[in-house]
Amino acid sequence: MISQKARYSFKALIALARAAPGETVQTRQIAEQENIPRAFLEQILLELKRNRLVTSRRGKEGGYFLSRSPEEISIGQVLRVTDGPIAPLSCLSRHSYRRCEDCPDEIACALRAGFAEAFTAQLEVLEKISLASAMRHAEEAKANGASQEMELYMGAGI
Image (cartoon, rainbow, N blue to C red):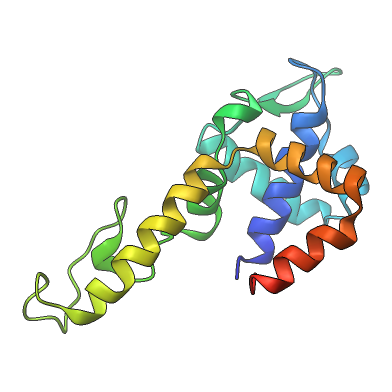
């Protein structure tokens, strides 16, 4: 499961994605609109800014906006920023690779082999889904009736 920090990050990024291009959104607005504790949101937005997912503007018209288009920000990128490496094993991580201390032969490791295929498939999906596509999917689900969507997800064990 993703952390509460990641959930709030996605909610904040989607709120920013809904704004007109170049339009800033104030922290207070996002906190109220998305029901996120303001102090926690400020920390999250600073981390997203350090990782170049959002940009801030000072002054009367100040606030935050996306650094790139919603099509260019993947769910995988956001998860890495908020929750750290996505890989279930450190030896499978592309961004934070570390050899497992208790593994004498990484190539012949059954645990690594077992997780590698599933993780590769998961990673492809996380990198393919952008904020924009997630927003479109949510709008389609709303238009088609969310109950159908829930049945699909529940049936898949998601």
